[in-house]
Length: 545
Ligand code: AMP
Image (cartoon, rainbow, N blue to C red; front, side, top):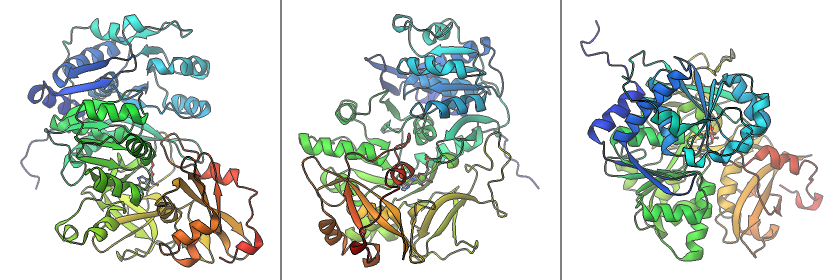
């Protein structure tokens, strides 16, 4: 027997119309690409999204068509998200930091009919366009006054096409499982793979992200998602703010610590989210300038492991609560967040900090299991590390236009991460399966070593890779970017790490570099580092393991 409740499809347009009706005057602030600070609100955003839907319809965009964006976090980008998905088309966010060949592959694979780009990406698209097979219209996300001189054929001016419409448009109703967004993972090997979100997955995910136990985005907060809208939907923050009517601040193309601090301060941002590299630079800036974060209450850190020193700095030095989160493009992206339970909040502060360094507890909607190489489910003992698998209503079940099955017999998706789960339910990523260091038949966690190393006062950033070893198969090499004017030595680092990790985990050598390579989503590029140190061999005398 079915329940007798209404079947009201969970459509993204309904989030927006709710915000327009009940939080119409809540602000959306953008530090724009053109320069000035732009201010709008949810009511205006909804009206302009309707006009944009009319304009896109006029360009021939129909149900299921892909509209690509090469764009920063701005109000126009948000209008595009809601207009395309609201009309039943698909918002395809493209990461402009990828290599040309990857971008060409992605745009051709997605068969995007319309390409919308910020002014910053005009030269990029001028270069790529001859190789793009399907793009019929180019829309430049600016007003008439800022339209650039460009080689691009018949570029449309965004403000012109929006303002030419009257907004007399009603959001259509359709199945909530309809595709709404498309985002390719920037996999380090093989071709990028398209994750195709649905209205249902995005709306359910938005409900999950607003809660106090996850990102804590209530109607009283001002949220700044620094994580780009092209990186797993800015972790869903713009949907979360629209759902609750929180004030939304967008940083446009600005990622330098000085401007980010200015935005946090001027706009009195209370919650924010970004990858550790952004926070590393901001904390350095705060230390150097003596500035503080008086308005900020909580920061979500994810995408890569948040080092202990970073969590401590936010919580102790700046009184900002850290939400250490884990997720992936394939999980919409939120999977787990490290907020305390009644039980863990009663633990001594040091033990709570230990827990905050982990990647957190699964949110309802993401089931997690850890399995060994033979698929056996491992216990939640905080030690048994294995392959992290997930399933749930906002976890991918297939990649876009790809027949390869990605789920196991129980419907779980293998994340490619290695992790353990403790008795409190806190999951800790110990590595990517391909980055784990296999030494003498055991696994050394490169992430744990990196986190321990960055606690050293002279270390700005650290990465650990496995180097082939005749006796142990692989041994860890610690690659360090020292703080300005400082140096670190092998002996010093090994002594520093000696009481923090098992003796057999200690890196066999330490090398200093000027810079550690990062991927387009801010992760350490282990493949590039391994390539750089391909011919590196440990000095025989130093390799006792
Ligand atoms: P992406 O799809 O680009 O968001 O990358 C997802 C991957 O980032 C995950 O599979 C993890 O390997 C990594 N990741 C995300 N969050 C964290 C975190 N808090 N700590 C460690 N790794 C993370």
